[in-house]
Image 1 (tube, rainbow, N blue to C red):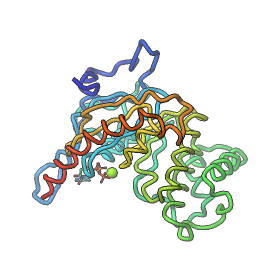
Image 2: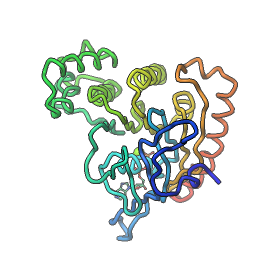
Image 3: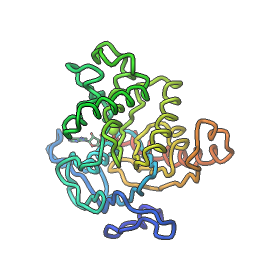
Length: 284
Ligand SMILES: Nc1ncnc2c1ncn2[C@@H]1O[C@H](COP(=O)(O)OP(=O)(O)OP(=O)(O)O)[C@@H](O)[C@H]1O
Ligand SMILES: [Mg+2]
């Protein structure tokens, strides 16, 4: 039995009482069925899926393209409702809006073309009514952290795709969220920048203590960055396994030299390979 199936009960208050790990997000038997497709038939995109995000953990999700990863993120972010089942954040049901304390970085570039880098980063936090001097302090810190300090006054159209994505991460960071949901945030970055950004994400996660859920297509990235990796099946996606990496919080790029790294990588890749073949088969 996988960890995912073992967690198919109603929301528990504690994910792992023995380890003192609290449940931050509880997803129970959640499905998403889209009403309209070309054939006019409903399309079952996700689930049923059950799992917990533990408070303060770094959890990555990998799975074949189109298996329902972004759909799962949308459910947790409150951007769409499950067709059945439930999602709870900090013990409260999530439905219809992004809960307070949650920030999302989307798969596509979601920077606002009409705002400068600075105003893009400040956008979300200004809506909370925070005094402008505190907004400035947070934005300046986030832009420096993302290597964008010298671009504060320019517009997204003058930036590369990867830099625009960093603006979106800065916007999420400025909110100081308790839960950060990231959908392939490094997809537009070159390999070196991607590695560096991964390390920065780890630093951010350690400094803030937030819970992070990262969707990624990179197995290496998932293995290096995560406490746990949820491996999804082909569509309709559900977790076929949740792999504990066992890394300490102080991990960094050097962790890839650890002999356990290769073993974890092979384990995840083995599962993913089969699911990706199934996913491609469906589309033939
Ligand atoms: N609004 C929608 N209406 C109908 N079908 C949808 C809708 N959004 C997504 N889907 C379908 O649901 C399935 C899951 O989509 P989703 O975007 O969650 O996949 P994904 O795992 O994030 O894929 P990728 O890795 O390529 O980003 C896909 O088959 C997609 O076509
Ligand atoms: Mg996606």
